[in-house]
Image (tube, rainbow, N blue to C red; front, side, top):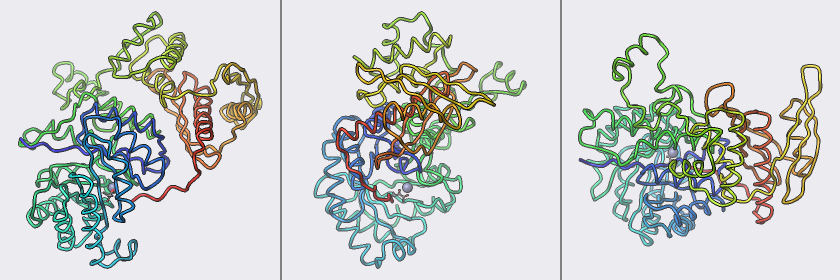
Length: 514
Ligand code: KIV
Ligand code: ZN
């Protein structure tokens, strides 16, 4: 049985989705979870793109063990060198070099002749190979390239040392039959020892279908992202690719994947929470309703035999019905123990403040589920760093005929700062009060509100992007009240700005990704 390697690009292509901006510790948290999930390769970022990208790839390479850690690189040597610098501490490191091979990209974007592209590809792969054994090459916009020219460039890359050839459908234009033919053509035409990989975008909603067609045609690596994140309409959704291969054993009889599928739902929730990109309810495999049965006939059938209407066992993807894990009477020990079992490692001050949040929540909500715990603990340890400001009290007033006002008490070490604000609505007023207390005014961009579980006592989770002091960060907050969750999200962003200011982070325009 062959292994189809799962190459996760959530932290690179996925992070290029508009509005997503993850800091180093958030990327590390996701990378640790991807390792727990058992992916074969983590594309941790694009090291030349910005200092933040470099730092994240380097931190992941230094600490995450299990998967191969790779960084993306264009062909100039300074890119390749930077990628190597970032991944070199990994136990298993890879450099991923790409250059476009389609006519439109070569003429309009690169302004290079086909000869120049061939030369660049060979030289960059050779440069990467001078640093390490494991080199991947991608002819960008491969699907829209002239297949013979693309294979010529791929041959040059293999001759220079590439061990993986990734064939991107960069703009999501492919249909399964044609994409499979192209994969077959590469296998038949390029000679040498290499693995063929798929990288399909979802502009026509065909990314997963195309990736699977690629596997049937002989590809043995699939590039994909959790929840299908990625440029524009996204990449192939990792969870769908994995479960299609696992569920249709009859069709994919000679291949398997290494992924521990029971970790899929938790990984999906973590990525949704940290990116602010929520998962649609009816999303295959990880959607909240993927295993819910509404019609009486269906419910009856499932009670008689689950397989009447379910082709996947919910527990095999970690989607068993929201379990009650803890309640009002659970103590600190049970709390810490449950987190450990969930694979969340938190100690010291972070554990203490997470426990305080848990107790506050337990007073308002009878049954606390895994998803609730993940959400409140993430707020405390999300960055694993000390937060300068904390929210001690929030009071809001307002109504249809009363202008909204808010009063907050914010802690700053041992000090308590009281401030008030007014606004267009209660959330606006609460944010104005926090601006007054902390002296950090920011421009709020994306604003997402969602509920962590069902029920009117559900935790509300707020994710916002805030721009201030030349930086853009994502802030998150959870509470049973959405105004409080919004205030916490804004304060979370303020704490990030303060840390950036204290570290003296440079204000720099990030380079556009591929
Ligand atoms: O879509 C694409 O072509 C890419 C490459 C850089 C692999 O993301
Ligand atoms: Zn891509």
